[in-house]
Image 1 (cartoon, one colour):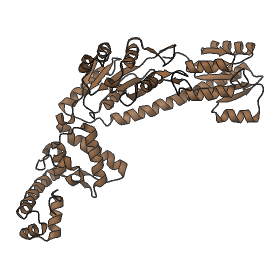
Image 2: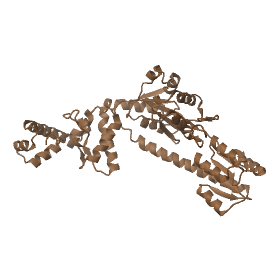
Image 3: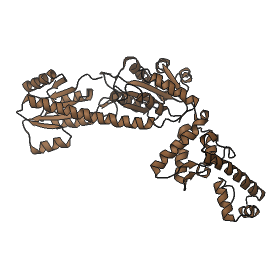
Image 4: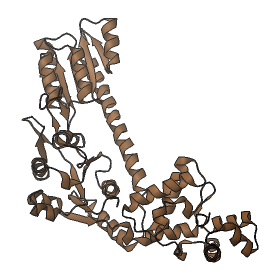
Length: 461
């Protein structure tokens, strides 16, 4: 991690270059000096600088070209123009490029010190804003970790033990069980929580693009690499890096990840410079990595480095008691998002949710609740608002009474009676609602209302 701010000085006058470099070095900064625009562009390809102080007119690329390059490679870094040929036009162009300040020659060295210090404050503020936004996103997401089952308590206990360390974590579990959410929870409880959390799904990118995203690339490394680019591992320096679907990573990229784990260093794609980083890796998979090793598709040495501390996330079908908690959580969340006022589930809807096998796990449950909130018209989400594959599993099931209020439990008994009563009548009359209503001594409209209240409106035509 950086111990001091990195500053690049670009000046073609030797005495001026020497004076600026010496002065800024005495201030405690990590300073590099070059005398041409070509050298400056090359250094920006190789390294990230917090501030670039550049003359406007230079051999090769101009100061404006250098500032454009700076904003491409590091948008939060600050640029300062120093020139003896200042014009209104050049000043306006520099400001459009986001230049922090524009200083005309001759100048006082004390003024340069102040401008550089202020530029560093702005750069630091921009980075801090990004960190804070990312931190708020993470905190908002970890609030959504819901569960009180024994299986989830075991997961939470494991997270609380490993989070304060720098140990690599391997998260195992089926798709949709919330592996990224748990990874964010580890980060949130760690000493790195004020730094970036970076997540990459390794299964959606082809090998070269994944390597470029993770490690960055130098200009010309492959077709289309028109400029050098920092990798996400470099950007996440000091923070936590989450590799989802790690089983899908190719063997060459696995080798580079192993080096990151062993040496905390790597090279950009097509590059020769070793880049040091301090990141904590968390990986996740829904595959059997030991089987992948036997098939020759995964390195055993990488597996052992990743599997220092593993956490198994249970599928939703094995934490049935958490389903009502999650269902009400998603109900509140999507009502707020969609501007609806739905306060509860009907007992039959809750029973259907608890009876379904949930092959898509928590993600599938959330999707079902969001769909139900969109469809519901009143303040109560019933089974007719849920997908038919969920309600057809065990339509006669009763919800767990420990999750119901007295009023809800009483309503569940009444709904069960009404349901049985209505279903027997409809069965006796082959689904004919008019005949069933006549036998019940009710008009057709009231009998229809009874069917809807008992969640059997779909039974008759």
